[in-house]
Image 1: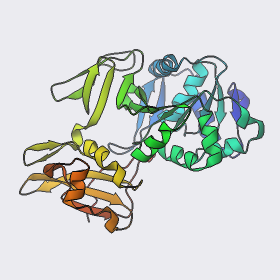
Image 2: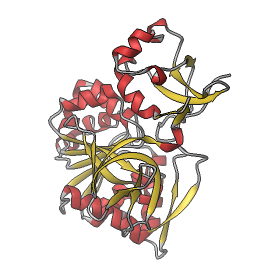
Image 3: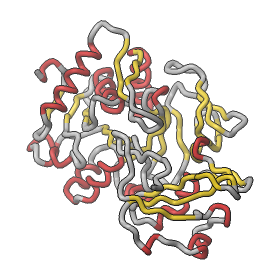
Image 4: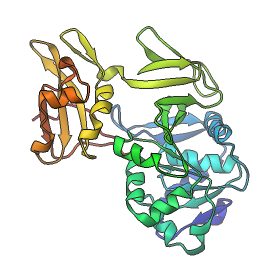
Amino acid sequence: MQERIPNIIITDGVNQDTLQDLYAFYDEWTNDKDQISVQTSGSTGASKTVFLDKEKVKASAKATGAFFDFEAGQKVVLCLSTKHIAGKLMVVRALLHNMAIIVLPTARNPLLSLENSGSVKNEIIHFAAFVPYQVEAILENPITRNLYQKIYRVIIGGAPINSGLEKDLLELDNQNFATFGMTETITHFALRNLNHQDATYACLPGFEIEMDERGCLVIKENQITDRLVTNDLIRLIDASHFEWLGRADFVVNSAGYKISPEQIERKIAAKFNNRAYFLFGVPDSKWGQSLILFIEGPTSEEFIFSKEQWISVGLTNYQMPKETYFVRQFDRTATDKIIRKDYRD
């Protein structure tokens, strides 16, 4: 069946379900209909099927190609499910730019398959996309870490990148970028260079932004979307650069102070040794809302911090979590993004 897709290399370990999903998407992309179907991740609600215009999908793929200077004959890695938008877009980018697709398993460490595929591991790979938990596993293994650094450019998205992984990426020789996007923008519309300690996102060609009166990101009308008002709080740098501060949805109003949990999470990240955690606002009869800390995994005194310890990382009194709860396991989306909610019993 693989001859139906031009310039495709299938490595050892790719299962039939992955291939069937790939072939099904290729057939959907090349049929005479104007739209494709996509399953959303479910990070902001129940997962659902949405339909995207093929011309807009092409515009998204071309914008990424323009940002990275894609050329015919280059090779890309596909190790994300083509049931979801990230996997679909990798296929479309390759097809539109006449690039070869190296198909790997949709596994935690997909580069193990590359290592075990003989001559394929010596191929020059120009572009790949991973989710953070894949990159963590890849970099923990010395062999796949070396293979990873040979991929010229990598985009990482689908879930937040923790501070430990960001520090690790600073040491690598290849180029790594964090993605920023949403369903409406058809995967990412902005990228942040992870090879520098810089919080700035740069928009892809064709996108311009502004900020509304709430301090939230507004994407101006473009080839992909009409004017789009988001709930993402930003620091606007110019019409194509911004720094993301957090979600307005999650802002906690405690005793009149507005607190962005994501901003505080970045301050305290070093204390958690890769344990999953997040801050969340819950109703409080005295303060309106209070900020509490959820930590995944068994209860541990190591993560019960004193006021002095919070002050040491730059938190003020109103930014300090009022309570800490340990949760056996957080709910997650299909792309491993933590679903933020009140996990108290």
